[in-house]
Image (cartoon, rainbow, N blue to C red; front, side):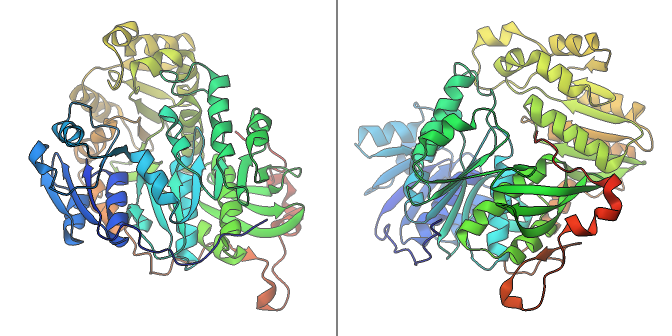
Length: 528
């Protein structure tokens, strides 16, 4: 397998003036910072000031508030716009009138990837977490990566960063075939399921798109793919690079053995083609993270990280915001927030919450995201949500749908479907009413999960305040968890690695230590 090239990139944007519409977005601000580091000049705009726009200004960018044609400075070489920016935006219109080239966010990110050793993480689920894992491992290994991730990661200082190392880690989304703008050196396909059915016709078309993505990986690079995924062979056939499969059990290139769970947090031994590589203890709860971690181990090994560095980082990685994020406790109630908005994600997260917290009752407020998605997955959503004991469903979060789709399905339809399965579900339209209902109903020992890709997270802080007012505010808690990349991580609970350079014998893999505890092992379990 060819390893990543570690040569220093040049500064190709010196003297260029690039305007970013929506510059305060998590990904867009990362692209703008990248241009600044590569010698370019950055102009931009957003509807309001934020920490991201303030940082860009400190770095030398000129950022306008609001959108106006006059914001496009004379001599602008390129305009980059986010997916949320409509064609009628006055700055897009002005760029067209003046003949200034314009690119979508994903198109420009693809260009930037050519300046680094691109590592792209794709899949229906787990992209943000796994891309964050990879970035954190490389950072803790002293490799100073750049990254653009679709989630805030406190331990990384945010969702994007420009490093001086050779690698650029990106989250590669399949919606709108955005990931086909990337030509990475290494990539992961975590899983492929039906999703974004407002864009794709069916699962077959989705798999073809992932195959197209695999075909764009550099021929001297690497594709890491979930061996348990039923459609992997068609995707693998499209790749011209080396392919490594990962999974739970003994037949994959990278495989996890000797799984042990401690309140939902898994420890396992990672093997590569039958040879013990490293023992890992995850700080994240949920069995699905074993597969995410295996993909991260494979990618980071390709990038040049040592097994010891990988184990240390995975043992201290706390995850991204809105990924089973504990926001606080009050009145004996623990409140957790999660971004899950697909049936598979919902079931995995709720099962992980039950294992981690062992609640008296597990409550979920699930806000469906998109009417079309709700209609496509109505029965699957219902089955996934029955993992909880109490289910509250507000109105569907309206985004990207036609008015016809909006009229085709309601939250009440989902609640009725859940109730036919014998579960306790309730539709409450407004957040204020949900808040009052929960404050009156929650009891000591309960766990509440606010869940969805919309704005359901807004419920958490008021509920915590009403329950006792002694919980840590979510924004303060998030700020306190931001850790500079140069800071050393905490020692993991268990982290052993094979490293011939250390001398002596490595600690024995968990397989040998676990023989006397075989009742607690979960060997050869299939992936989710």
